[in-house]
Image (tube, rainbow, N blue to C red):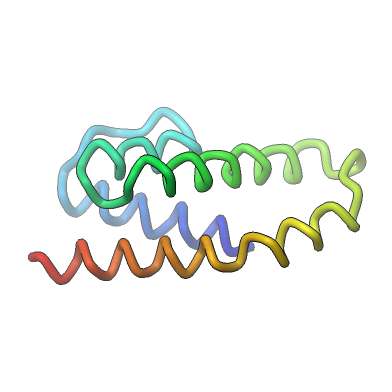
Length: 93
């Protein structure tokens, strides 16, 4: 899943830049926001995705595949925005 990749990237940035340790998957994006990697709007979106990821992983039997496909179609641009924010942050170093 793309959100897993985003979480992994966030964790690498957090570790490399010695930012505070996140308390969970959704919190990795809060840490990035606190450190100016992503803005609040993108944080809100990524946080929701991380929470949805947890729902899929832990309660997959309750997930409607049509909803998942719809979310993917509507939110692919958010992953591009995340990538752009991370690349911009990394270029600052």
